[in-house]
Length: 67
Image (cartoon, rainbow, N blue to C red; front, side, top):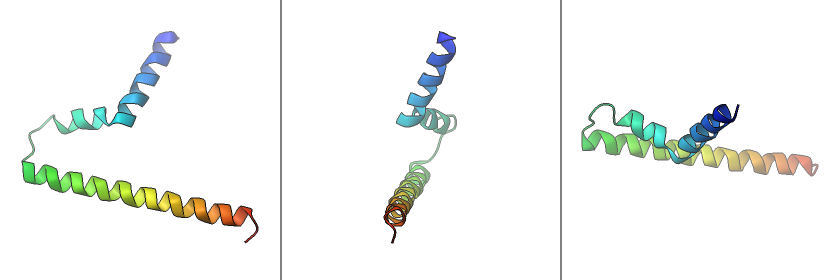
């Protein structure tokens, strides 16, 4: 049971820090230009996801206050 909990915690930490994604990306060689494009796309997706979360939190807080 402790081993299973440790594995779950380790996978959660790896996901948070992006280690697993980095390892998956290194399975095959990517040209630097392709890597830059991919990194930029990932960055834009993270930004849009964060923006959507902020907007939804704002809307839900206004809704909770009765607006």
